[in-house]
Length: 275
Image (cartoon, rainbow, N blue to C red; front, side, top):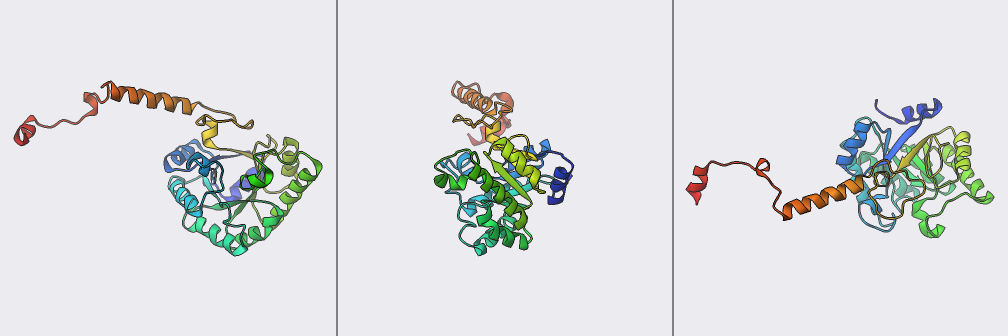
């Protein structure tokens, strides 16, 4: 079944959880599609997972369009959301609409995601007026890592929790059709989910959200660094990949690969004629 804004809203209304994974390339997108995941997010997390940056801030519109376009070629039923990178929407409402439009027109995204609450409501309203669906992102917003002083849980005191709730209500009113809640306490995320009519997607926000998202490299154990508390590794693909790479390296170096079955034959007369 083709996922749309309408079908995702229906899932919330019926109490059916929404699954989301990040994805950045065609091959992985084919597998995610085949697995039946509801939504794919081309996150600006690609700055770290694919490009090797320390954070998401250096990611460009060209980076996002390139990866979004690649993923889009694999998806028929899965709903495709693309992140708007740092400074692609904060500078002006005009820039926000133009860049959101590029992700849809050039990247073939079905929706765009931007970070922030009340302060980006003007951009959300303008983008939705251009008939582009918008996903908001509250709590730990990685593009604000310098302002937050690092990657920290948000909303643990009264003022912070009140602000996140007010931001959630504001972005819904502005026209966002979904909101990602990252690294906020479970009870706060559950309260927000109950108060909003639009779906909430949690990452480190507990089971009370309408759905969940993880970075696929995290849930497959493909990173050696610190594992966030909210990540569950569903497989150790990283370990298997390293073992396979090592086995290949050894097989090449000791002459075990390629074998006869991996090669193509030629008539001996042809070789004799050119020798």
